[in-house]
Structures are given as structure tokens and as C-alpha cells.
Length: 375
Image (tube, rainbow, N blue to C red; front, side, top):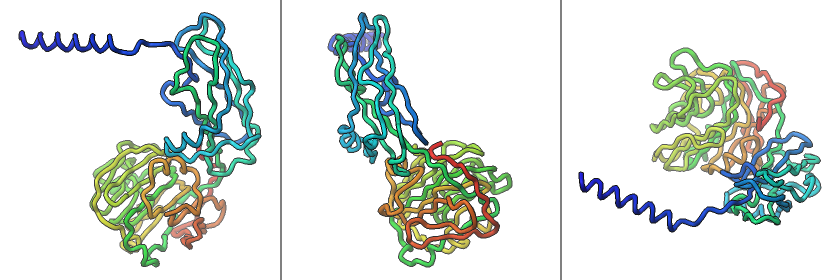
């Protein structure tokens, strides 16, 4: 018991010593809302504006004037440090209502400056834009919190398009006709999906895309919830830690890098597992080969699908996050890309030009218009 008290006393003295050596706290100013992240994200589908302000960690004792400016020159370094591919908002597409704000005496938050997007005509579809705005000066005695000196305003242009409701319809992808795909070392699949209703009968499987008993992305099975997403086949299953909700859009991606599997939901890593399974055979014709919305002779998708892609490379987290709504069809490693935005008929174009156009089997597609990404 005596030894226990000696140890506790030593720990207390150590903590007190650490406090004495710690850097004293200083009040600071920073962009409001950037305490945890200097990045703020906005979805835009036309001219709009948003207000930003500056905060102080304590009430100021006299009016504090703070100078601001757009700092597009900072974006290149930000992209490199954060593995992003953002583009600067085109000149003339935006403006700041003023270049200074004031935190009034006795207050801790300034008035607002309006950042206006005047036009989206020059904004490319599927490209994410960013406007850095910086604190460049102040007449007060508080320092600027360096981690929040610049706010990175990220803008996603909302894509409004059609999407395909499958119901009884499904697709067979003719990968089996291409022998060069019989040993793919890295593979990624991704899509946006909206399930109307999960399968309620055993084995409770709703198929998304892939090859049965090989590399199949699906919801449910007899040993998991029907609302859980799973990569099945190949001996290394990976199951989501969450149950999905019906009648809600999600972006899902599965990535195989030759040794590990990674599952992403709405751009966030949800699970990973070691999977030293070797190359993947996309020409496998088991149960009819590679399908979208179908497996094992049925197990169809009662839902809506958009932006389905197959890659012969392992996507990075940045790849997944940056391209959930659209990707350049000429991107390296993109094997097949179905946007499902035709709006009519049963034929779906492969945007890569590699020839993997598909036609619905089992029934007709019905089309949903006005689908927004991001929502």
C-alpha cells in the first residue's frame, strides 16, 4: 500500500512539472467553424452566396478590424499536402462582399463577409472546386491561430440527372469475352445505390454487382443482416459494420490491392481485411459471369442505381471521395463506366469507350429523373 502511494505521488509531481513547462495559453482569432478542420464544403447548383465570419477565443476589449482576402495561390500546396485534386474557382465566377470584418467591443464573433458564386457556367461537371480565403491582418492584440488562418471553401457542383430503377431488370457485363481480364491483380468497384426494399426471404440477398462465388458486392445473407453490405466470394468476406437504410442514396466502393480489401461507404472507410487471394478472374462464367443487380439465378436489386464503375487498379481514399458523383471517363485504370443517365430505353452506355455497353435483361428499366449528387 505504501508503494502504491509513492507511485501516485510521483505521477502527480510529474504532471505538475509538465504543466509548469507547458507553453502558456494565448487568446487567438480564427475563422468561425474551423476549430476542427480548416475545410468547409458546399453543394451548389446555381448562383448562391454564403456568409463567413471570424471568431476570437475570448471577448475583445475594443473593436478589432480583421483584413481578409481570397488566396487561390495556396491551393496547390493544400492539394499536395492533402492528396486532393481540387481546382481553383474560375476568376469572375465569385466575389467577396468586402475585405474586412469587425469584432466589436465586448463580442467574440465578427460580422459576416458574403462569398458569392455569381455563375456556374464555367464550372466543369464532376470537378470539385476550392477557394481559399485567408486572414491577412488585424489591428488587435490577439494572434491568428495558424491552423485556421485560411479557410478552404470546397464547392461541389450538384449534378442533376436520371438514374435507373432495376426491379426485375438486371445486366450481364461481357467481361468473359476478354481473356486479358483473367488475372487482374488489383480491382475496385463502386456505385451509387438506393434500395427500395431489401430481400425479405432466405437467403436475404440483394445483389449489387460482381461475380457470384468470386467477387460479388451484395446486401445480406443468412449469417448477416439483410441490410448489411458485403463483399462475398474468394474466401475473404468483408461486411459493413452498419445496416443500410432503405430509400436513401449511398455511395459504396470496394477496393482490392492484391493483399487487402477495403470497404468505403459515402467516402469513409468502413472496414478492411487481409485478403491474400491472388489475381481475380473477371472472365469467370460461374452463374453467368459478371452481373449488375443479379446473382445465382436471381437475388435481384429492388432499387435504383447510378454511377457504376469497375477499375483495374486499387482506388485510394482520395479517389473515392473526390469522384463519387462523376469521374473522367479517360481516367487511368477505369475499365468500365456506366452512368445510368440515359433517361429512356434499356441500353446503357459504357463511357470509357472500351465497348462494355450493356442491355437490360429480365424486364424493362424505369427511369427516375431529378436525381441529385451530392444530395
